[in-house]
Length: 255
Image 1 (tube, rainbow, N blue to C red):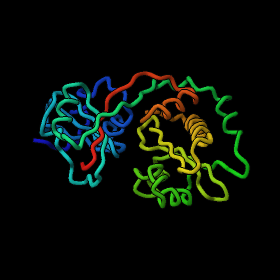
Image 2 (image 1 turned 45 degrees about the vertical axis):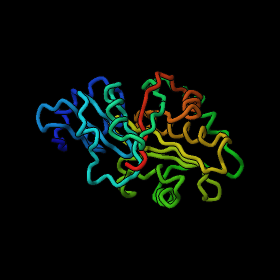
Image 3 (image 1 turned 90 degrees about the horizontal axis):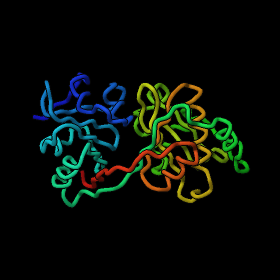
Image 4 (image 1 turned 135 degrees about the vertical axis):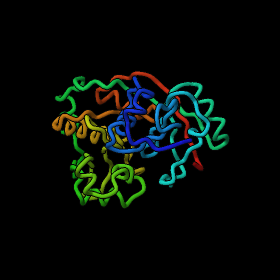
């Protein structure tokens, strides 16, 4: 029987040692939800937040197939704790499932070179400005598909203001690129970076990433980075992150 877990301590041992901030958001009850195959002493658990679900413990077919009623999206990324979970998820979702490789980075709060990041931020294109995401830019980000994920996990500006943090690069008030908190946990954020299609490959993501890291450091928040592709991984390394390892995730279309 799959059930929601409100006492995170029950599920926490199953995720022990998994250094993933999206899981921490769920365990800390900041964002996301936890589900398990039993209300007490579960052997399998799922942490689900935004467009991600993480599976831990002993593989459980009912939990693998679970889509909570509040999940209305058609796309989700499933992250298995091990190969046994991966094989079960692939069997469960069949042709809807596509395995992908993602890139993880060490979480090292003191590794960043502040002077280097400040130099990056100073190299602004003509007539462009970097600004924190306030209510005006929150609404602008929400209004366009390419930039919506910069703020989409926060139901309104008040929630973003309380939990989120982000910056945008804009020209005459038009957003060209942004870096923001995809999710939040107590000690930091998970970074989301997006650039308008016609503005890519101009260094805008690097500018926004550097600025967001500096803003996080001011607030004693850790800016966690997890890369979807080699380009994102290369950008992370340019900003000071150290590559840790690749891992397999499963993208589900028609969730």
